[in-house]
Length: 363
Image (cartoon, rainbow, N blue to C red; front, top):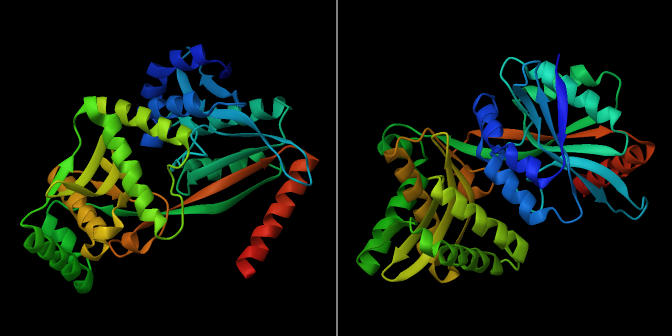
């Protein structure tokens, strides 16, 4: 017989750390964005008017077999003044991919059933948005069985390209088209010839990590200015989050912050995470003055080579099908958003939301 404990305060969240980490390792969804460190840091930085709503599922021996890392929030729209909704921790304004319920392998269905039943006994919400769940996760299929006649909807939300990494660097380049392979090699030779040399820097100094992150923010912003976009680090609270998580991940050997240095100038950067022998690319940037030298592409190729040399199994580009990703791989994963409805107002909201997106696609 399973039972649920609801965690709605900071102390309870802190006490969960050890059991959370142990359960994640025993689940099929063990990824960087579901770690206690990522989720707890997100809550510290973005809790504002939200309510913590973590559901911990225990068996008869009080072993943790399931976690629903959730919070309660409010959505304000013009037609309906306020909708109370439930969503994953780790979502906007910070982008987190591969989110899910954390369920002990072999007990997924019974743990998820307990979570769903608890949610519907908690009547003070209009809809639940479960975003960026891998399409291959058991969650989507099990929810269809468990929900029965209760209204819900799922849709593809993101596409995440990735590279299965070979044992040898030469095998990676052999997998690329001749044009892409030759362009990368030509640009690297050209950069070396013009400036004598260039250097791949992997940041390892914890005393200067804040300065390194500021350099990342600056190069990222410069990249986006040329297309009149403010970039993803414009808000102070987002910068605060990434400085905190970068320090935590650096101390845990999970941060891989790459820079391309030409002479004394840092001209490009990649903000990546190492977890479960995989490298996750989160954001990057480069100085537009160096665009003709393709410093962003050069740095990406160097980071992939570094991952291969270290024996990593995969380079995950995360969300987005930009050309610089798809020209390096044709492999991709899809993620889905699941909407669970619990009120008439939620159905009205979803109807107009779907109508809006349909018209947008037609245009």
